[in-house]
Amino acid sequence: MANQFKNRKSLTRRSYIIFAFALVVAVLSGYLVLQVLSQAPPPELTDAAGDVAIAYNADAKAVLLQLPYTLEGLPIAGSVTLRHPSDNKLDLKLRLKPDLNMRQQIKAAELEKGVWKVRLFFTAGEESYYSEETIHIE
Image 1: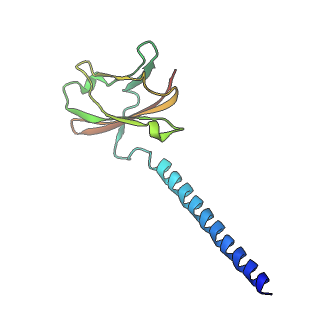
Image 2: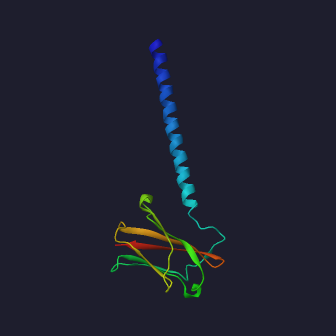
Image 3: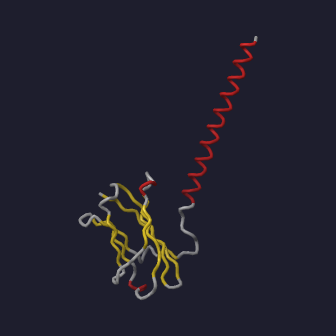
């Protein structure tokens, strides 16, 4: 009888461990969903997608950014984020530094091959903008 009670105690302990593990998995899954939802741009930003060109040049092994010439002369500050959807450890965040022709080239020779999301968040004068494009690095 004592052995049967001991087995029941052991079974209860295992049940608590399994429940705790399931709870941790559920919390982490919820965290990942929130992280994905938080990737959306803030609503106060202007979508500059039609005005900003983002492309990968395989010959130059570079990501090319072209801001609209209409922003020329305005103070521009912002960031470029390169996100690798399958491995966030590869993600990069760089300062947006367009040249006098409103272009920026980001070396991509060191980047993993595959799909990347390129996001620009920047201000020009008093206006805030964002743009996003999916590219494939070969």
